[in-house]
Length: 250
Image 1 (tube, rainbow, N blue to C red):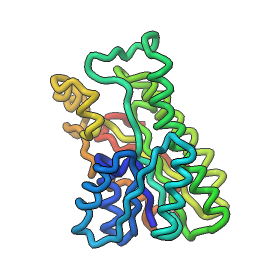
Image 2: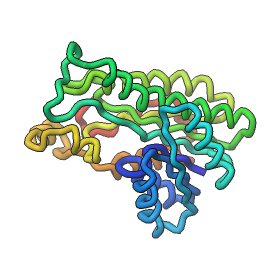
Image 3: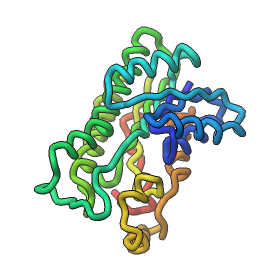
């Protein structure tokens, strides 16, 4: 069974669809109940067993309750895909570190960094009690966390950098249980968050700086999720897969 956070839209929903196409039972987890119902309806054509879980990744009690509900209905989570995330900046909002408020910093890191930690921890605690074969954890970082961001929100950049490090330590600690832990560092991807954060007039210039000539789609990232969740990636762990159209090359 796959539990996907941030599943009401964007990369989360696209990832859930990709896994459903491979026959996974899917727990769609998000803070938006209406969005979850729309997401479930959008997956109806896959024929997969799909349940919705209202879950706030930043809240410890909500994470525990959400996992308990999901597993009671669908069985043990074997694939955890952590797509929930927010960005504090946007048009008209300063990206200068000196101007970031503590409230903005805490809000972004609570969802992106703490939320990733809480969900990973709950998954691992449950797998300690009830192991699964070939478990998978897939985290979502960003090219912004790798590059430091050019015009990005400092809180967002820091939270995504934290996910890179957390993925590596988790991969080392989970290996003995046969659980792989990998990260996808996405480049600019057209999602609702992207549209809210970006000045529309800046998008053509951004696309021009991407060697493949376009901003990515949620499906581009979902393809990487599908690969890392599958059997072909069984000997890959602690890796960061760049899905960015060439925006960052190493």
